[in-house]
Length: 329
Image 1 (tube, rainbow, N blue to C red):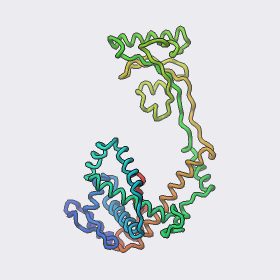
Image 2: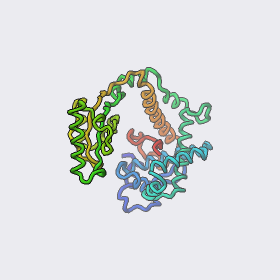
Image 3: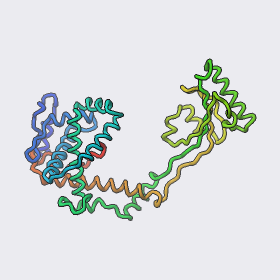
Image 4: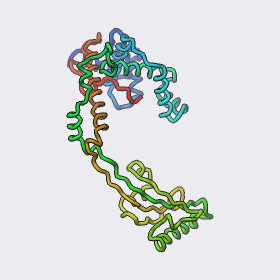
């Protein structure tokens, strides 16, 4: 084991014995402490080792320093837009505050952190060619982000089963609400009477059978995979197995008594390249962008004044060499 790697292993061993201000590394003179690692470790849970988190912090420091030196900034409007999205994704302001409390972070600290991340993203974008004529452009990396038509076609050929439409079903549903009846038994008897009427008088047409009834409601719905997963398990199982046009037995649900019928079914199909090419270019473009970002991170690591110099060994491991991508913020 190289001396620097041995030092890292010793520094990160037995975390209970470390002080939060113990310096694990410096990046261009800026310290990375054990407390920095522990804070991120608490947020990430057990998904990463402390060594992997230390690498991520080092990359963030390098990118942040480079962005500041480059004079990169982001408009307040962009920051406000991202913050609004964060509040919305948390279910509102109260949910947002609860989320911050779990992270031991105040709204002001969160806003400052997000601004820093946006500045880094802008710097990376300029390095990789998102801003034409940027003085920070690294042409060899920008070229790597371009998706050629032949690359998209090859990616589609190798992954064509990923590009398919979902199975879908058009379903009819009769609902008899218990709240309209004196007892659950009476509600079920009413549902049974409508089902029988549909079968004997209207060839299974539930909609016609309940026409004019104030205590029964008929509606249709289109079910993809996501919508089907929200159904009562018994109803979902029936719709998967039953032929088209066959009325179900009566199902008891929290809302009342339900009868369903599969009106039509359309199996999913694999999209042609022409239909899928927008998604293909988007996916492949993201993969190539991430690879270029990784290489930018390695380049910056080589250019930085890092102590200890061989902190992560001569070659970063592929699993943890990625500069943090904050697209999920």
